[in-house]
Image 1 (cartoon, rainbow, N blue to C red):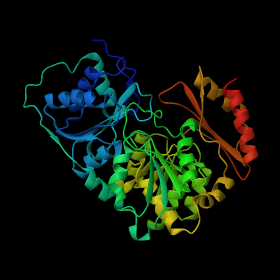
Image 2 (image 1 turned 60 degrees about the vertical axis):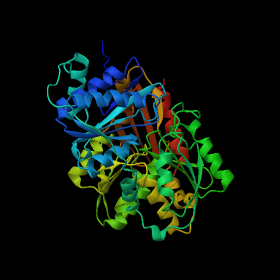
Image 3 (image 1 turned 180 degrees about the horizontal axis):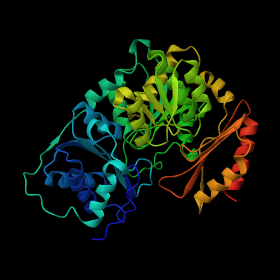
Image 4 (image 1 turned 60 degrees about the horizontal axis):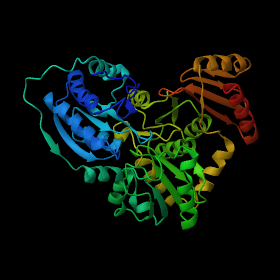
Length: 452
């Protein structure tokens, strides 16, 4: 059988079903995972995609045929696999998910001991080779592994509650949009511990995605949440992607809040608890985060975008929190992993402690550092475009940085442009100091060059 490499990415596995990813490939991945990592006991879960149960069966067959015991979590979110691996001290975990990809896709995220990510440099590339070349076809002669269903929801919910002071909470009206993904079940489990009134939309898991694939980063996917906030007179709106490792915020007016500003907001919260701590951030948009972290007595540290890089650097630095503007938030106390549940609990606690609405709390920062948000452009030759931008803008710049893509900084504005790791796209972010018109002007100027 000819196996495609297209589904094997730098950080995970993600491809179109069945030509790029199918049950045979998943079965081989299970065997290769054990062969490469030597795992004896792992957790397995899957998201709401229709192919999830079949892929789970194929994966479990591959794992157990190599002698690995499996704890089957069932339908869950990616962070529940992270939690299970570290909480139960397992050898690893495998989450079947394609996150926000189209509904004819599926994929997998792999972790090892201590919920450490398995990427291209520490096992994923070797797993790929074994799967594609058929090197996993030999029979295992040892004892097959066992399979046991396990329910971790109660332990997981109790862990989530440790991040907030419930005594500080007050009744808030909160719109929650699970996008027919997996977040709804966790919200239901948390609800009895919180004083909030949840207004639930697209709440039930449904792999047919009747309202479209849950990806609130797409402007077209935001209106349902925004409208529900306005109609209900809610204090805040929250939406998740399919495997709910990212959450997105809307203020009381239904305005979408760029994830960039949430990074600074959460950094301040952690620095109140951990004075002088290190905070990681990605280099796409930086000025707001750096200013807030320094003002709060923390140490801001830039890190290359991507969960593999941020998790590794956080461990090296013992940083308490790391944030990406794409709405991935990482926490030392969550095994240095990202969570889409912890951020909204923290933001709502901060909101409860304030007598100001969310729009007011963030307005000063948004005005101080207006940002374009990430703009994707499909290009034929991304490296050539990057080279052209460097030639045009590096001269006269205050700073040129290539930590992640190309960042060029001037006194009053800066931009970052980087190649996508998974698609033929260039991702542009622009910010300015106290000048929204300048930010918009430079954004249009750069896009004309990128798309020209």
